[in-house]
Image (cartoon, rainbow, N blue to C red; front, side, top):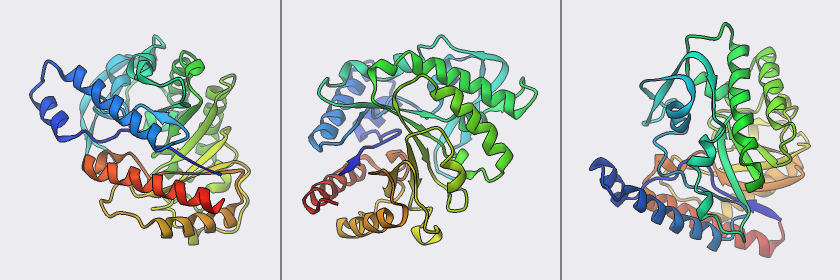
Length: 312
């Protein structure tokens, strides 16, 4: 059986985009209405985990930039090589949290009791990498400070969720063994005692030569962006975890062919022999128009229906 879920920030529809530009007084109500609709679509498509589409987040790090103590809001900065921007956090003092940032930023009140829920959060290295550090004396110290923040935030919501996905675009770029070991130890600190299924999602980079190192990370599922990490670059290797396959290109409006994705899934299963398989987008859907993102959700539904019949 193959699992299905989406991740990260979903694109806003045209009405929400216009309301945001005009600072419409009913914007909060509009966000909640659209979130409810998107949650119902996920449920109707029978995705295994239902997630907040985060359409009210201006970027993946903004709730923390706005609410962490020890952080000042920096300039708008390009988000990797994408045509989007985020407000860079500037670390000016020891960072601390109330532990309620995620609790107040996720639409837990809209989740159905009939569905398994998941949350998305950046890994500690990506938090650090996207920030400007003007306080901590070393990279390791700053990474561990963010690990403490993430741990406290997740502890406050762990009873309400079944899957935590650590989205890790900066981590996916790391090659140095010593640096990877520092980040791995920080992740050990985070997941200890959570008792929730965890996924480390390596967005946006080719990890064919570092996959073995990531297998040592203390998570249940590894996510690979197969639009970047082409399958023919990997050696035959057993993955001793679940594998979330980023086969739905979240940055391209071209629609996938279900038959080609199913063939790719078969090849991935044969090559890696993971303990479980999932189909997910390669990144946030926020990079493409909302109408195209909805079509991609429908493609995921079609793949799910066909693989169930095939018993893949």
